[in-house]
Image 1 (cartoon, rainbow, N blue to C red):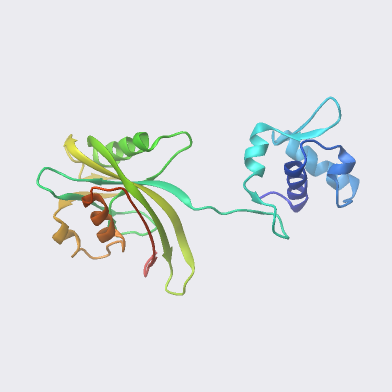
Image 2: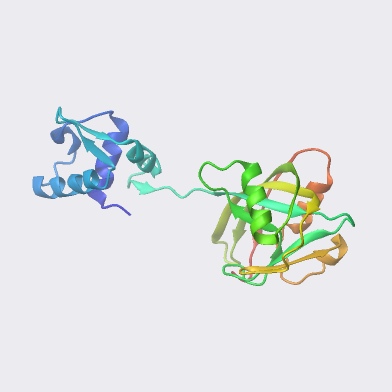
Length: 227
């Protein structure tokens, strides 16, 4: 987290394309302090001082500074929902591949393959990657919709806020990797899945989503007893 003086500099350079030192120091901070922090931003590649003496955000600096909420009284880094993939693999017998998560958080919970969408990845690419890495499978991938999932503690505190791009994988190729470093995989019928202990609250809705012909969008809040 940047120093509060650096936040002031970033805010000012977001609102103005370029500024001189005096204009950049809009709150009349002592010169030595202000100089120290602007040099930190320059050395970090966030701010550029041109030959004309004007300070500007670098390309990386623009992307970084744009993550801050500048409308609040105190400039702060904005938290945003995570953008993820969720892959539901279905075999020829109509069974779904379930994954027991064996890493924190949600250790021991049962659900489906999930993963973060990395910078520059398409939905197709990340679905292929996660299915291969976590189950050693490939298949026909069909986009089925989006889920907005929010997990809360019993006290009402938000734990996770995620958007899942739901992908159904059919016509599977490969030998299932039953165990991997963060969990276990196995195929079960829908009825068997719904009787599993520590089942993520959205599993039933996800199965309904992939069984429909149309693209779906749904969102819900879930209480997580054990995080």
